[in-house]
Amino acid sequence: MSRYKQVLLDATELEHPEPLESSVAIIGTLKRGEYLHLITKRRPVPLLQICESNGFAFAEHVESNSKYHTLVATDSSIEVENIDV
Amino acid sequence: MFNQGLSLEQAPPISIVLRFFILCAFFGLLSGLYLIFYGDQVALQMSAVTIAFVHLLLFAVVSITMIGVLFQMLPVMTSVSISNALRVAKVMHLLLALLAVALVASFTLNLAIPLAISALLILGTISVFIFKVLDRLVRLEHKDSSVVGFIVALSSFGIALVMAVVTALNYSDISIVAYDVSRFIHIRFMLSGWLFALVCAVSFRVIEMFYVSSPYPKLMQSYFLPVLFIILIIQAVTATFSLQSAHHIDMLLVAAVIIYVLSTLKLLYNRKRPRVDVTIRLWYIALISWLLSAVVYSFGAVEVGFGAFVFGLLSLIYAMSYKIVPFLVWFHLNAKGVLEAPMMADVIDKDYLKLHLYLHILLIPLLLLSLYMSDILAVVGAVFMLTNSLYAYNIYRATMLYRAYLP
Image 1 (cartoon, rainbow over the protein chains, first blue to last red):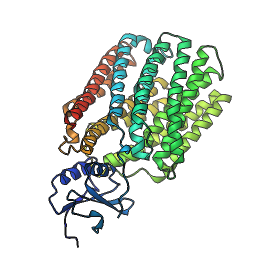
Image 2 (cartoon, rainbow over the protein chains, first blue to last red; image 1 turned 60 degrees about the horizontal axis):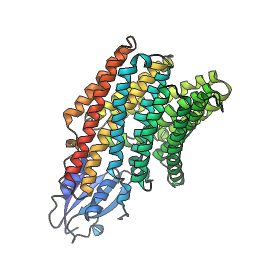
Image 3 (cartoon, chains in turn cyan, red; image 1 turned 90 degrees about the vertical axis):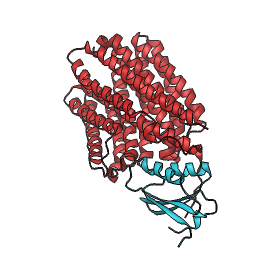
Image 4 (tube, rainbow over the protein chains, first blue to last red; image 1 turned 90 degrees about the horizontal axis):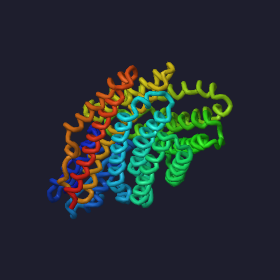
C-alpha cells in the first residue's frame, strides 16, 4: 500500500486528445503527496515528453500490449518508480 | 517498472509542419486562380493546361504537403527522425516550392527543356530525402504495418519520380522508355503507390488512435500494402510489353481502394464513442469520394474518377491538418512549460472550421455541374480560393496563438 495519494485517470476509452489534455490538467492540480496514475491503451509518448521537459518524475508499467500504466508526480519527494501498480 | 530514455528530439520543431501547411494553402489559392483563368482549357482532356493543373494539385498542393507531414509523422510513428530536420525541411520547402512553380509553368507554356530540367531537379531534391529515410526504415528491427507502409509509399514515390523524368525527357525527344509506357507507370506509382499507400500507412495507426476505433484487421495491416506494391511492379513490367494488358490490372488497384474505404468506413461507423467533429466529417467525405472514384473509374469514367480521388486527398489533408496543428500547438507549449496553454479545441476557431467544411462541401455540386458546363470551373476556382484562404487563416491563427503563449 502506497503512502501517497493516487489520482486515477482511466483513459482507455477516451478519444484523442482527451487523455493527454486531462492528464496535464490533473498534473497541474496535484498537491504534495499526490501522483497521477494514468491508464492508456498505448504508450503516452507525448505526455512523457512533456513530463521530461518540465522535470516531472514519471514511471511506466506495461500490463499488456494494450494497457499501459503511467505514474506522474510533481512532488519531488515521491519516488514513482517504487510505487506498485 | 521502467523509465525509458526519452528525447524531445523525437518531436521535430513545430515550424516545419506549419510552413508546409501554409505552402499547401498558397498552392491551393494558386490552383483556384488557375481555374479562374484557364478553367475552359483545363476542361479539355489531355491539354497541356490540364496536365499543368493536375501537377499543381497533385504535386504542389498534395505531395509537397505530404512530405512536410512526413517530417512530423516519421519520428512519432516509426521512431525514425530526420537529422537536422529543421534545416533539411527549410531547404526542401523552398526548393520544392520554386520547382513546383517551374514545373507548372513549363507545362502551361509547353516548354520541353525547362520541364525536363524541373523534373530532374525535383527528382534530385526528393530522392536524397527518400534514400535517407528508406535507409533508416529498412534498418529498423521491428517493422510494423506503418513502417512497411512508409517503405512502400516512399519506394513508389521514388519510382514515380524517375518515370516522371523519363516522361518529361520524351517531350524533348529523348526516349528511354516509350512516352505512353513511362506516363502510365508514373501515374500508377504516384497515385496508388505514393499517395494512396501513404494514406493507408498513416490510417493504420491514426484511425484507431484519433477516433477510438478497433484496429484494422491484422491480415490487412500485414499484407495489404506489400501486395499493392507487388501488383504495381507486375503492372509496370506488363506495361513495357502490353499497355492494354496493364490496363486490366487497374481493376486490382480499384479493388484495393474499395477494400480500404469499406474497412475504414466500418471502423469509423462502429466507433465506441461516435463523436462527430469537422475532421471526422472530412474523413467521411474523403472515403466516399474514393469509393465513388473507384466505381466510376471501373466503368471507364477516368477523368471523373481521377477528380473524385484528388478531392478525397484534399479532404484528408484538411482533416489531418486540423488534427495535427492544434495538437502540436498544445503539445509544444506544454513541453516548454506553458501548462496553462489553451485547450486543443480552442486553437482553431470552431466556426471557421465549420465554414471551411461547408465551402469544401459546396465544391461537390459545383464540380458535378462542371461536368456539363465547363464555365462553372471558374466558380469552382473562386470557391477553392476562398476555401484555401480560410485554411491559410486557420493555420496562421494557430501559429500566432503559439507565438503569443511562448515563454
